[in-house]
Image (tube, rainbow over all chains, first blue to last red; front, top):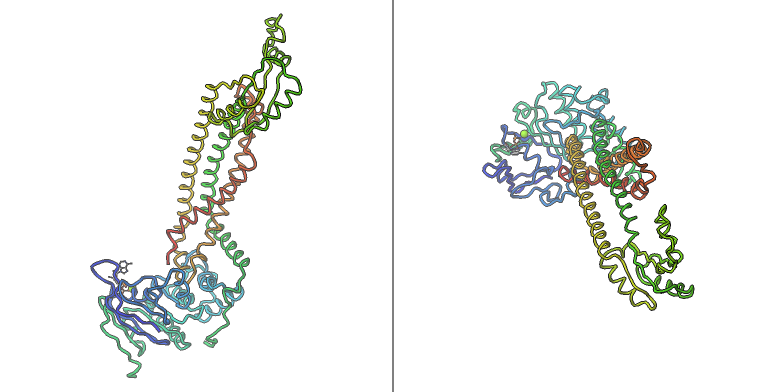
Length: 225
Length: 314
Ligand SMILES: Nc1ncnc2c1ncn2[C@@H]1O[C@H](COP(=O)(O)OP(=O)(O)O)[C@@H](O)[C@H]1O
Ligand SMILES: [Mg+2]
């Protein structure tokens, strides 16, 4: 369960990135966060994994008030949240394997368990043959999968993705979205931020539409279907 | 995809402190090797920094040693009218020795005084012809403990000495002692100031070099933090890296210093008019070497800590 109570985020004084946002996303939901560039989609995601703190209001994740967390509590929140960043944030100097393994190393897994689990996830995403490669040698679609593998490898309760289909062709888009669906079926709450209207039409899911930092539309197609 | 939702999750605490440390150390080592150039630059900087400090220490230790030798000449002399009997000498020596600040006491009888005087006039003994052994007074030379070699301490020591029964006329070259000792204190202060300044500069340079290495890995720090690494988990490998680099730097500095020192000794005769080995020149005592090693490790650790403070934010 993710709740935003009257949340305002101001990077600068004059123009808040989000203003007075109220939102409830139940456990196991699949939500598309839409809106034009600059609407505040990325900011909303950042609130959930505590990379920004609201100027006003509260953010509650799994019953815990994120706004009040200390810097020693935040890591434990993040261990339950997988994030696929818009720019992937992959380490170019490390192998694909190492990039994915980092999520489990942080949790203190044993080396042999990490090896098995990382291989398993890479295989599910169809990139296990690129395990030893450096991310910079991969295509955009493949890099996206590595970023997704890193986010999914510890079976997070929540999966956040920022423009995950940004530069992908239609085939790759479908594949990636299928992976999100499968994670959702296994119980993970999924939030995808995207300005790409076609992706949103991909399925009948809940859509939260942002414009200029405010929620303009909060629609749930799944009830009408 | 067929996979159990709740796969068995090894818990973090399953890893004991020792295996945790090994994990961090292995990570630190891998990082050092992965960033060879940056590592080399950092170690080089620390080596240079510690070499400068240890050269300074070497100078300081030698100058201080020399001056300390001189300061042994700060003695209080007691002159007696006539010769003392052996019993008197023993009893007086006992009394003086029990005074706070006395290092050693030596009685010089008239005979001995003349002998000394004679040896000082080597080659010109004819001057002494006809001088009776009675001419020179018997005396007692008292050298003081190191912490009593200051003008005030000597003054109070002499005051106490005066109260000893049977003591003669006391002399201690007041003026010379005062000048010498204030010079000694000035020298120490100067050493402390220069040393402190050097240490600050070196810390600044080293922590800036390490900051660059951390800046180069800012992305990695960010990712670690975003996947839920605790601040400690992020910092630990860097701190170990810093300590390893510091230790290597110190080791190189010591090796360079030792080889430089002995190269100097074996060549000095060629361009110096004296042999420094004979003039009591010493190398850094083992405590200083240990301190240099420890200092290198601390330098690496503090440099890493200071730089990480700026970058590890959630
Ligand atoms: N780190 C930042 N510093 C200052 N302003 C920012 C920062 N991130 C985003 N903004 C501003 O906040 C607004 C919302 O940005 P963002 O959440 O990235 O929107 P979106 O992801 O929908 O494109 C924009 O006006 C953007 O310029
Ligand atoms: Mg964005």
